[in-house]
Length: 218
Image (cartoon, rainbow, N blue to C red; front, side, top):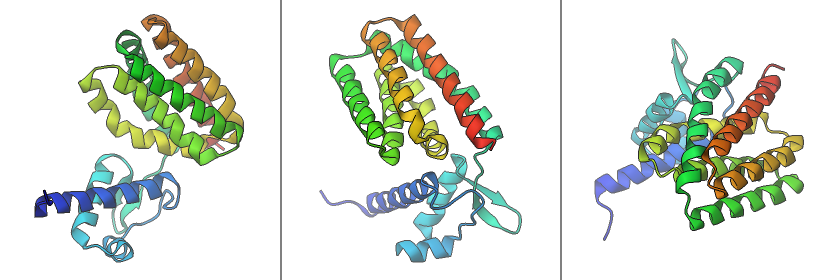
């Protein structure tokens, strides 16, 4: 069945949104850069309407801010923003890990194993961008295994910020320790041990927080 005009518009809007978000996450559009609706529309060869809607969504999700006389600019992600992010993320990640230990399916566990194996190969090969993406995939998969739709809805808007933070702060030296911590977390989930899973998730986020703040403060 062909797309209706509304479906086509939504698809274009989502495509523009994903492209812009990816460019911010990857640093192609760094913090402080002004984004002009007309210029973006010309660059992407689309009308200004999907660009405007995508930018509004990115503003809602914290990727853009609107400043007087400058318009839309890429939002900062410094130590203060990271502190706010981790204050929200730590308890939610612990809850997700605890629920995943109670509700994970064999297929879900297999998926975590595959992601982790790919992450370790990418980290050992020094493929930093791939490592960062897979790291975020691992955390997203745990949230999905929680079996809690409300938690999934709450965590979904944080996913892009998590990837952006990882991209800003993950270095070649952090890949192997990260994989080791993920393996421990996976073992607790597989063992159906919600308390240990939650504790490991909390400690993992706390360690990531300390490392990220050290990087962002320099």
